[in-house]
Length: 101
Image (cartoon, rainbow, N blue to C red; front, side, top):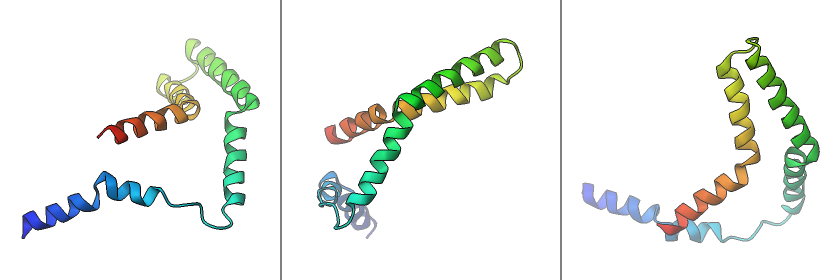
């Protein structure tokens, strides 16, 4: 009975079952939501956001060097910016690894 349950779960979470669900078309009316998300992405990754991120890293680095900021908080800011601006590369890497298996 236990082996049958494990086999059923393996079939449920197999890549073919997951990919069959991912191929569905966009539902009707989702164009507005997609447009809004594209605007948010453009705002978060645009030239203004890049300039603000450069200023943030410079100020955090200066505060860390002068001993006015905790190193852990400064590293968290820098790591957060890496994740924000590298999100598309991170997702692309995860997709590549997922499709190879």
